[in-house]
Length: 99
Image (cartoon, rainbow, N blue to C red; front, side, top):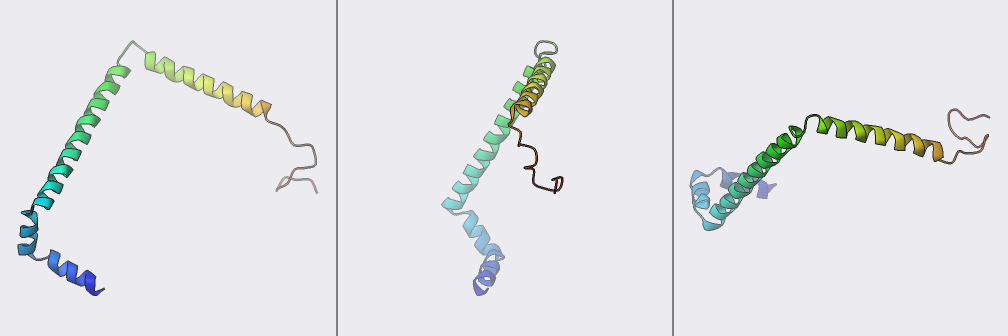
């Protein structure tokens, strides 16, 4: 508790904040942070540009791929549900079980 108050009073001191901002480690940390943010922004813009180019590719190719994925997924799901082993009658437990 005392440590928290001490740190709070130090950080609210304008002279200390100014001296820290002029120190080499703090300036370097600010440079690295700015670099990381800029790189993330550039990569995000590049990814968005590539995605727009992919979506605007051959007419309807993205829609056809999505439809094909949906159809394959539903077929596999139905096949998996049909092939799963069923419990023998009377061994069911739970709210719908026979007494």
